[in-house]
Image (tube, rainbow, N blue to C red; front, side, top):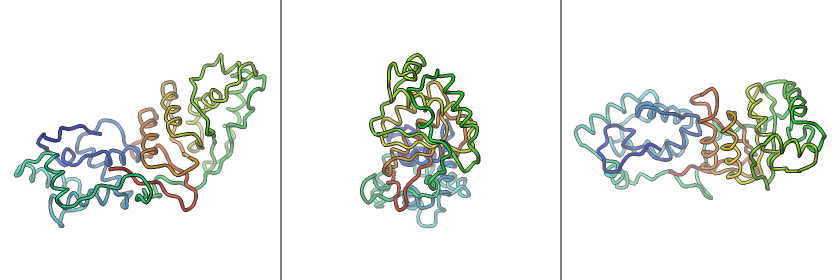
Length: 299
C-alpha cells in the first residue's frame, strides 16, 4: 500500500483516501508497478467501473459524499479529472491530513468494507469467477514416476501432449493434494525419483508446476491449479517458482471458496513475475461451484 504519515498535509485525493482495500482491488484486477497518484486514481476508478457492486465502491462514494456533499460525481474513469481538481481546490482552501480525514469519515458514519468472515459481502463473480474449465490434460497423469525415463524424455513426452491441447476453451490441470509442501526442484533428485530410487511426491509436483510455467505461454488458455493444500503452500510454490521462471495467469480451483485476502496474496505473487505485463487483466480467476461466493475484502 502507498505509505504516508497520517499527520502530513495531503495534496491530492489519492494521498487523502488511499488504503489497503483500494490497493487490494487493484492487485486482484491486475494492476501493479509504480504509478503516479493520479494514475492510481484512474486505475482504481477503472476497477470500480467493472465491479460496481464491490464493497470498495460503496465505501468510496460515501467518502466522497462526506468530503463534498451529495452532488459530488461518483468515482468513475469519466470523473477522475473532476474529482482530482475538486479535491485540489478543497485542500488548498482547507488543508487536511489523513488523520483528520479519517475523523471526518467517522463523524459521517462512513463504514469501511466488511472484514472477511461469515456473512461478509461477496466480491462480484463477474470479473474473477469463471465456469468450470474444460480440461484437456491432467498433468499429474502424464507418465507418473517411477517410469524409468530421464527428465528430458519425460519433458518431451509431456510437451507433445501439451501441444495437442486442441482449442482455446480447453486447458491443462495440475492438482496439489492436501499434504503438499513445495520443494525446490533439482534435476538430479528429479532423475532419481523418476527411476524410483528416491520417491518424493512433493518434489515431483513442484517440478510439474515449474514445467507448466515454462510451457504456459504456448497454451491456448490459462492453466488450472486445483488445490486442497493451504493457501500458504500455494503462495510458497509461486514465490519459489518465480525465482526461475515467469508465472502464468491462472485459474485457481481451491477445495473451498477462498477469502478475498487469499486471492489477493496469489495475485501479489504472480503480478511481479508475469510476462508480458498486462495491466487490468486479473492474474487469478477463481472457479467457484454453483452457489458459492468469494468472501469480501478487508478494508
